[in-house]
Every structure is written in structure tokens, then in C-alpha cells.
Length: 110
Image (tube, rainbow, N blue to C red; front, top):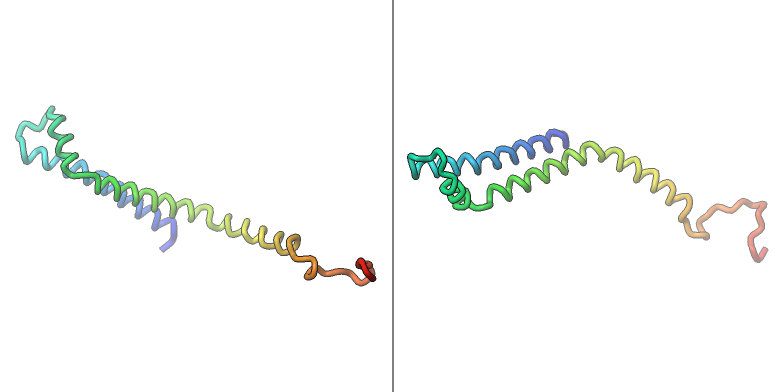
């Protein structure tokens, strides 16, 4: 399974969990009172009764899904940048003892 597919699945799970909270709140309100229409306070109380668990899990799933999508889009580019940095580091940041010197160049002390 690719990273992009995994990211989309996590975002779909986040949408499902987010909608589930409101569907459960509606079911609690309808079951407790037949006069549901226009009773906003009762609906808010039902949502408070459910707690924040579904909201936390939906946000967590959304962040994980967005992370996978970003990783899928920029993962290859980051790998190329790291490879270029490693080449530059190898060329310019070697210790003086390991650098190649040409035989016709004089080194101090010769």
C-alpha cells in the first residue's frame, strides 16, 4: 500500500469519526425527547455527554493522514536533497589528513 493511499484512508477515518460524534449526539437527543426540533440546548448537552474522545481520535487520524500525504509528495525530493548534501559534505568537510594532495604541490615542511 502506498503512502498516498494510507494518507487518504486515515483522512477518511477522521471524517467518519467526526461525523459519528454528531450522529450519536442526534440519536441521544431524539431518543430522550420527541420534541427534538429547535431544542439546541439538549443537543449540546448530548454532545457534551459523549465527551471529546471521538474528536481527539478524528484529529489524530487527520494529522496522521496529512503527514502521510506530505511524506508521499515530498519524500523523494527530500531524499534527493539529502543525497546532494551528502556529496557536498564528502567533498568539503573531510579532515585535512584525508584530503588528496597532488604530488606537485608542496606541503609545509617539505
